[in-house]
Image (cartoon, rainbow, N blue to C red; front, top):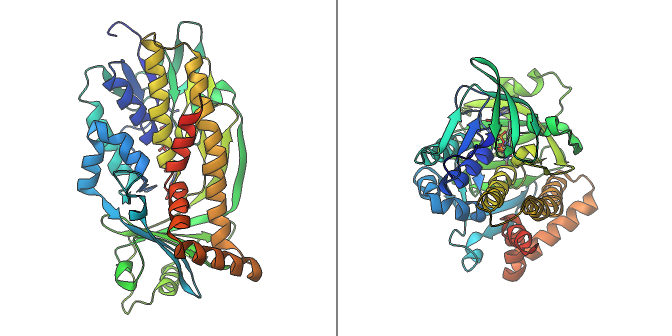
Length: 397
Ligand SMILES: Cc1cc2nc3c(=O)[nH]c(=O)nc-3n(C[C@H](O)[C@H](O)[C@H](O)COP(=O)(O)OP(=O)(O)OC[C@H]3O[C@@H](n4cnc5c(N)ncnc54)[C@H](O)[C@@H]3O)c2cc1C
């Protein structure tokens, strides 16, 4: 398709680069516009589920992720008072996927792998320092306004994919509502090289506690732990060295002081775009939906959207499908976002933060019962590893 206007992708995060990779590999000209001058390197997600590894495997990306990442064969849900409630063995999924485990790798180490893979294709191009600022569209294509290093310009494309994150310029230009809510607490994220595995934790663990629940996971060079904090409190009350040290000692007693490499806070939302598609413009990843990180579904969902959406766009451009294929993208991806990702991520958070002693006891009993029954554990893992939702989506026609 050499003379066709490119598909313009707004945003070079995991969602945008995955879409670009699928399009480029199918021979579609693609131009990624990224607002920043380089790929962003901030610390964000880092947990990959089996379907994501399956989807990126044909491009050689999964193999490279294994070279750099950490395999997580088991994960736990714990109670701060009572210890391990359930210790899930991902091998229960061995007949469901070639990757019966989670893989941990920082998001900012995935995006260069995706970009490397994209650059193998001559029909791929990326413009850094180029922020999408608006768009118009007609029957034949889209005109995208960008603020580029040489000033404001208009780019002509066949389609535009808004993979430009939570504050998506594409979603805003389309006037699509981002429906949902913001959690009242902020998340404090601490990174430390301390080896919690030696203290009995699995490489991913969720610890329930009415006052100070936490999520922890091991990345290749450090552990990351996330705790709830009051966003209105003075930052010193949770960021100061002595507060951080005391907090980590409560997780696991360590004779030496903890080394803390990074500390930051961020706000967390549960929102889904009222629509994923408008004409020749479609949303993917955080531009379409955001959720709390308990379960690690944000980044994975971005990749799943991107693969599905790119496939629809390729089919339309090849004349194998009409524009209704974009409607199928929305019908396959938006309901599972609501019925699975939003529901499960909210359930996961409610589970670890529950304050009512009776409800907590019920949760403990239920989780122990799941852990004691391989069939129940397998069903739980099919949901939590996002296998069920990808299968459900594929059934929608
Ligand atoms: C601080 C933080 C911590 C997180 N931690 C976790 C976690 O632990 N677990 C988890 O599952 N999820 C986590 N998430 C969510 C996860 O990182 C996202 O779900 C994931 O990044 C989604 O990928 P994406 O490609 O859709 O969007 P993004 O990664 O946000 O990428 C969007 C890209 O678009 C670019 N961009 C923005 N505006 C424009 C524009 N106008 N024009 C062009 N480019 C633009 C941005 O620079 C960025 O490169 C976290 C998010 C944040 C913010």
